[in-house]
Image (cartoon, rainbow, N blue to C red):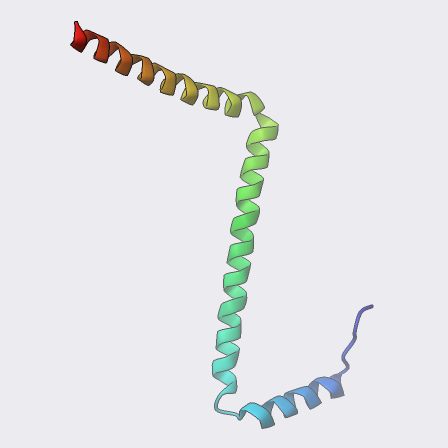
Length: 92
């Protein structure tokens, strides 16, 4: 259910807020709240961007990501064989 707050209710809430916290602390609290909202928005946008990049890569060119993984594994195996070859040459 959507809660709707009318004009007089908003004014009452601001009045209570003013009485509880005082006029000198309200601008600082608003500034802190705005900074927090900006940080949350940036974090959300970064997460969206990362997810979109991964989805785009997998959907548009799935073989590219698979080929990259295979190349990495082949490189690791090749490195291991070179190390074995070097150790055998040293023993001879």
